Length: 121
Image 1 (cartoon, rainbow, N blue to C red):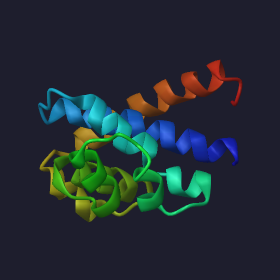
Image 2 (image 1 turned 120 degrees about the horizontal axis):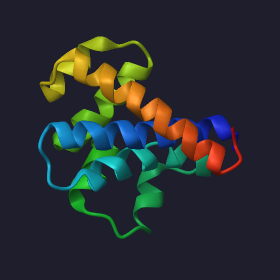
Image 3 (image 1 turned 180 degrees about the vertical axis):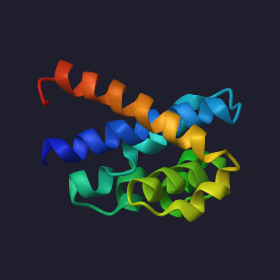
């Protein structure tokens, strides 16, 4: 798959993680995983449900990835919509728009560095 797809997944992962920290979750790694795995079906060319059936993940993460349910799922949906300029779902996670913008720019810097370290940027 093109490096841009991996870059988007890494960016989503970091942004979800940062927003997870803002909402006060003790497990921002679940948010990170949701963002990272959110494009797994596209990368692998297989249905998400089929892929998740073979992965030892929590029910919370599975619900977030398959149905965009729970706090993690709502955050993932808001992050993906933010990428597309769909601002209305930001309200789902009850954070000010500035937090989304701050998390986005921090995630862009971080993910750019990760992609450079991987030799993909």
